Length: 257
Image (cartoon, rainbow, N blue to C red; front, side):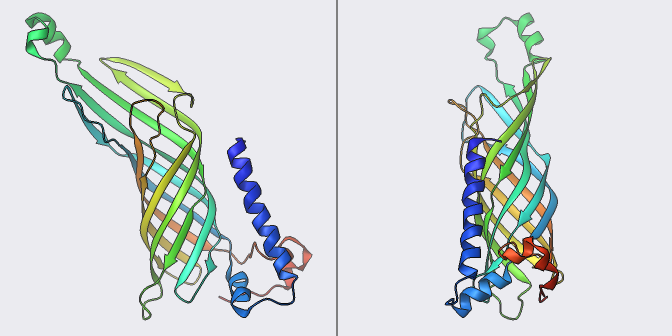
């Protein structure tokens, strides 16, 4: 496991220990008690479509971006901050990436007619990149309509840590495949915007857009992750902030729906 991930997990574990310690204190506000009691472990799973965005423009090249299937799998821990706002940190595995087609515009004066005809038949570069990340969503659920509490807006940030990358490139008729992260930046950061709807008190569905804020490659080439994801969530009867949840006393806990 990468050192950065180990550090983040240690921080999260320390926060859980602090929560356990706070439970043992007699003087704790009613609001804080409600926050601790509202926490649940929430499983999320869903497909999506990913692509890569670039701010780079070149006069001699035309590029088209295509979408690639992506997936999300992990857990969130919703904590109710107020009647209409919840904080949902979590730990998820997700894939990112995309496809691109690039066509080089070869000026006529640079290449004689016969050679130009040969190059024009294979002057494109098709590439595909699949990246795997461990991510730490830091999301909020905001329900602005009192009469429709099932509906919520989802803003937030999601830092991610690169696990692996696999790319396939077809350049001028020659195909190559590469694995490794040597040319990739190890940390990514997404701005998340979306909407959610609770089908029941335990089952919900979210539609989110992830907008990558950081370049994924080292060097001058710019490429940022983009994706849209449809996520199904299921809230378990398990409160990770209660120390009793990790002992035999768990069977004595009672959870309200």
